[in-house]
Image 1: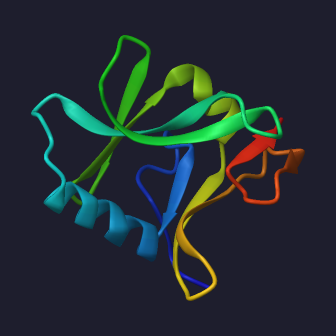
Image 2 (image 1 turned 120 degrees about the vertical axis):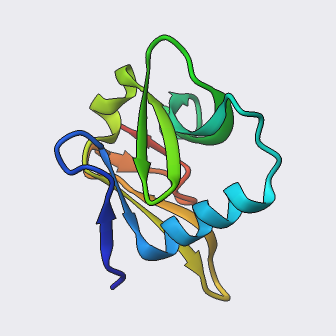
Image 3 (image 1 turned 90 degrees about the vertical axis):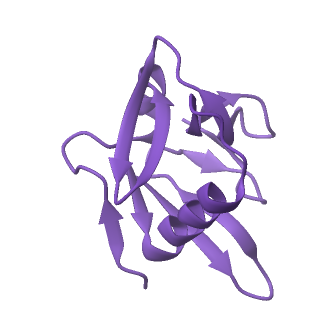
Length: 119
């Protein structure tokens, strides 16, 4: 199991594995970011289970909180904390699975692909 890293255990709802944090840093290094853009982590309505995860590039809005750890920054709408509190973000590099995986203790059920959940 990868070591978990927390941005600030008292404020950040998301915990990152070392692999997820490494991939986020890689993305920030190679993607073209405007000065006012961050990686957004959140949820939106949709998907086969009711809510889908958001992981995208976006500008900070009025309802957003900014979190930082070792040069990596992400934003999250304050209203999404309820759905993501305690979530672990992992990055898989295996042959059978590759990409970000959300492990969400708030999810009462998830879809087969893991990209949506119900609370």
